Image 1 (tube, rainbow, N blue to C red):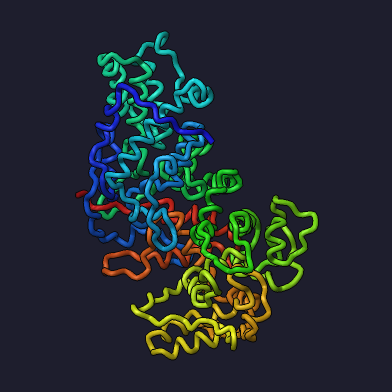
Image 2: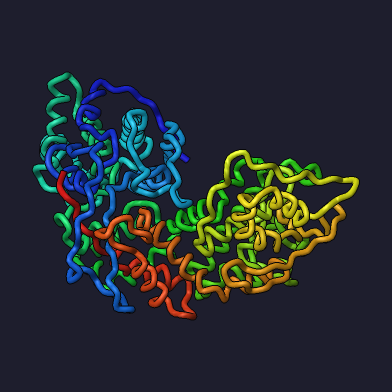
Length: 584
């Protein structure tokens, strides 16, 4: 990985002066302003405009016949992962500026940190952007990074002249950085920084660096900006806007040359063009961000970085935590790129382990190394997909014991999309395990629930499923007893009363639950769009996303795969279209 230099330069402050007023959330209406005019121009900090009624005739129809909501999308600031990946693909250096310059963590909404409504731009973040832009440009122009410099400096100012050369360089750079073609009037103020730097006694390189910094500080780079089709109007995205949506969905980064070329040809929006690009992109190594983000955020693997377990009989070190996260990520990769059914998420007779994780599970480790290998599961203890993997079992445990409540709550909210109310204040703690007369978690939870109806109302929705995993300890190892207490892992799935006996049997019952496929579709669409879906409209003129979700499930089919669901999301009106906002 490259190290970001912090090189001062005499033209400092020129680029920062171009960053105009980007201190708050840019709404859909403000986004249109940010896409045109002077460098860095645009409204910011304005409240989102109210919804505008859309004539039903304008709405696209799904396969089920119902109208689908294309949605209103707030201008999307690049989150930390997206910023780092975009810089990597833009300049060809893996600098990871969000870590180097300490960008604040992005806020999670519904389990994801790419929700546009939460991606504000504080004054502190803007200062960090300014420092990062200076270092990024210095690294990219450094002769020691010849390949990166060659991507940017494509002419010789001595031969071509300062003005024409600067315009050529900045036009190519801004076209990629802003993820769309630029016009001469947009580039002129940036190119003017070269003669301005000359007038201050600096050279061509100083002026060019200032202009490149300004390009990276513009809201047109920091935000993914889409044109506003007008109040209440429904319109298809341009091919370039669609290219950005697709690339940030599958790669968490900017479009590559092939995707830009497809957009330039005007064929990306066609069903075949979109299907071909989606299929190509998910097989590309850059799709690792998709699997990493879904495993890290939806499945919770990022929490493994915190050494939360304090059990005295296990070495829960960095290698084991990393192995648990890798298993979840590799499993998702297999499911999303293969022909596996959506329901295979919670039922499969294989997994991915290295030697350390295999030994942790009690699986044969002979011949295994630090590298991960796909292995068949020899018994039914682990054939529950993500639910019997150490990642899920560990992040949904407490520091010193299992937590049936956390495990059941995660399934309810993340696989069935049933929201569990937050706990009331001052709730009593679960009784501690008495080692002289050990009792099971089921028995201790029963005592806890008897404290009052308030506790029981929530626990009856989530505890039954969580108790099905009591054969797995706080780090996902199999156990026959809970400190000597017998285990009862039977129960019924809330909402269906389907009986189960143990985690694998529970996973099989979830496979048959219609809520599973609908919830997976909802999670994937929420992540792809970077917005909260509207499922319980608060006003009569607010459109509902329910028909769009139903259409995704219909398009995927009863035996459809997760790969088909990704393709259906890419083709959905919510991904390819948008509704206009009121101009502020």
